[in-house]
Length: 262
Image (cartoon, rainbow, N blue to C red; front, side):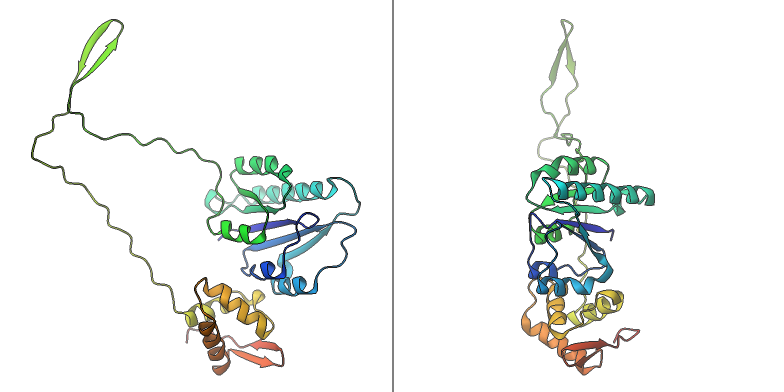
């Protein structure tokens, strides 16, 4: 999966710690743009972002002023697009960019970014960016209109330059139906069970492993997807402890991830 950048206009929108805790995959890059007067951040929000490590950066605008922070966001967006252009990723692997802000002034800039072949969208909540990133906002592409294949029973008349020409009609034999070719429906691949998915996630994302029991339980609920009950999350956590994959140490936890599937 290609990178997804979430640029937060913190003067305009202040996401909650709960929203920030949902950003867990290694493909995300978060940039928080804040003004010179915003030197303190909510402790719960910082804790929610801590597991992401270097995937999060704070960008401070040094001076106050109308639209000063907006220009910072626009400058960094342009620089990120330039870096992606230099990387020359294929169309299906290009990065996507989200600006979290209620300021519609960003929309024209994002339209231009889409015209370059990148996903780009302004949202008002972090959760909207996470939801759309699953579909990966694609550039504006106009699909050609489908051609009609319905057979014609009656002869059509073509009138041009004062002359009348008959166009040969397609004959349809009464009582006979043309068999339709039905493409076989793709078989759905069954998802691995919660235990296998959990081990694979913890093994593949060593830099994003939660450091506390509470954070791990939240991570399991998000990672296993919607519809996962608290009972399932608790059962997976208890098995992690029972099999020595997770070792509680007070409120903190340590990991001993097995090399192969168990």
